[in-house]
Each structure stands twice: as C-alpha cells, then as structure tokens.
Image (cartoon, each protein chain N blue to C red):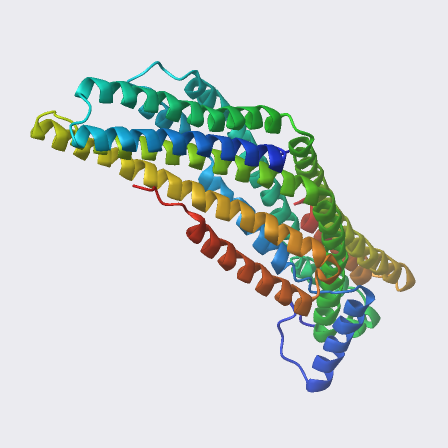
Length: 295
Length: 143
C-alpha cells in the first residue's frame, strides 16, 4: 500500500514532482485566475471598516450647541441635534456593514482548505486493489489533491470576483451619495463649531475690554480657553472622519473603475498603489482645509 | 442623499455674512468701550445683539444639518446599501455551500471509483477498501 501524502508535502523524484506540478497546473488552467488576488477590494473594505471608529463622531454636536446658548434662551436646535445622532449612527453603520460584507466576500484565504480533505478521500480510495493503488501513488495523490483543491478555489474565486464586481458596480452611486451626505454634515457642524469657537474668542476679548475686576477677567478667560481646546479637538475628529469617509468613497470608485482587473495580480497591485496614494492625498488635503479661528 | 450643493453654498454664505456682520459690529463696540466712548451698559446691549446674530447664523447650520439627518436616514441610498449588505451575506453563505458541494462531489467520484474497483476485482480487500473509502468520506464531510 503506498504512503498517503497529505497537503501535498512529500519528497519524491524530480520526474514525479514535475508530474505533480503539471497535473496541478493543468487543473489550474481550467479556470481563470486560480489564485485570485483581491487585495484592492480588501484594502477598500478596510478603509470602510475604519469608519466604525467614528460611530459617535456627531454625538457631541448637541453639547457644543448648548455651550453657546447657556446664557441666553436655550436653542431648540440643540435638541434636534441630539435626536439626529441616532440617524447618523445608522448611516455610519450602513457604510461599515457594507465594508464588512465586502471584506468577507473578498477574503479567499479559506478557499484552499479542501486539499487535506481531498487527499484523505484519495487515500481511502487508494487502499483498494493493486491497479488503483499503483495509479494513485503518493505523488500523484498529492498532485491530484492539490490540483482539485486549486480547481475548487478557482471556481469559488471566480464566483467571489463576479459577485464583488456586481456589488461594487451596483453600490457605487449609493456609497458616493451617503459619503457626500456625511461630508456635508461634517462641513455644517464644523462651521457651527467654528461659530461657537469665535463666540467664545469674542467673549474673552469682550471681558478683557470691560470694567470687571482683573481676577474675574482672568478666571473667565482661562475657563473659556479650556472649552476652546475641547472644540478644537472635536473639529480635528470631524476632519479625520471626513478624510476617512472620502478615502473609502475614493477607493471604492477606483476599484469600480478597475473591475476588469479584479483578481489579476498586476492590476490589483496598481489599484492598491492608486488607493494608497489617494488616501495620503486626502489626509493631506483635510489638514490644509481646516480653517483656523480668526481672532 | 445630500443637500443640493448650491443650496448648501447659499446656507454657508448667508451664515458667514451674518457672522461677519455681527463680529464687525462687536469689534466696533469693543473699540468704543476701550476708548471709553460708550458706557458698559451700551456695550452689554451690543454684546447681546452680537450673541443673537451669532446664534441665528449657527441655527442655519444646525437646521440644515437636521434636515439632512432626517432625509438621509430614509434615503434610497441607505436602503440600497442595506440591501447590498443582505445580498452579499446571502451570497457568502451560498458560496460556502458551493465550496462544500464541490469538495463533496469530488469525494463521491473517488468513492464510486473505489466501489467500481471492488466490483471489477471482487475480494475481501477491495470490498474492505470500498467500505473504508465510504467511511472516510462520511467522516470527512459529516463528522
């Protein structure tokens, strides 16, 4: 009875090794792209999944709204902002959920796992009769199991790529529209927070210009500057949220444009390079775009 | 789902003009207070007006944000994304099943070959082999 090779790991003669390789390649050639490389989709999905960190990014808008209306009549808009937070959570969750589903579909790392199973089946079969055993020696078993495993991975890989291509094409408009909505809200809330920050800055200068005691003027200025720091930190979060959402949308568009190359290593590498260069540019732009408060 | 870009620009511009005017007027009042051209009471009045104007400007942003939040949650785009998530998850489940079926089909082919061999060359060894093959297949796929 021949020894059974599991996972195709077995030393043999160079001729047998070549036979095994040729057999594997022949089976591999049946389907296109037997080792599907879906790196660009995974990279895009990774950018989308990163939006999970910004789930509550708009939550503090209501708090900052109240900061500036404490001394006057409470602003009814602050309550609206509080209620809206749930909607924004749902919007962010939709993008993150979509990215997670893309990532799961692009993850082909487990598609090669049938090799041991097939080798086991072949091994059991090889126990029968001399003729069958002779045909299925250890190296052929390893070659066949590897080849069939690659074939199965190839079929599932093609399915993954086709499914992803359809999804990415069909969702492109929705992703862009939702990200545009997020961008606009970030722009509006950032401007509102700039307004609060300007109000605080003007309050400080007004206190300084007034006739109140020096200790009051200093104390109030210190307290208000603490709020300014908090606002600046939140504006930085909004800026990174915008950069993260824009990077995801841009990468999604890039992958959509390169759908024909999905699964082809060279095209995938090119897409990855473009995605990474777009992300760094967007991050750079978002830093430049942050408007400082005019004193 | 997003605000019409022109409408958004209008809101931003209008609010900005409102802020610029309010801050300009406050600047004048502060200069007059420093030069003691107006009493503190008059400055407080100017400061109150400034606060109201700044809040009006802020409310323009907040109102636009509120409208956007109301519309986006109900938008066709969010529904489309949710549908895509569900469809992808279903496809993934289908793919896992397909992967399993393909491997199972191959196992069945090898089992059939084993049984054929046992029939062509009958004997204890070949029958035992076919039985072993069937058992291995059963164990492999069904545990």
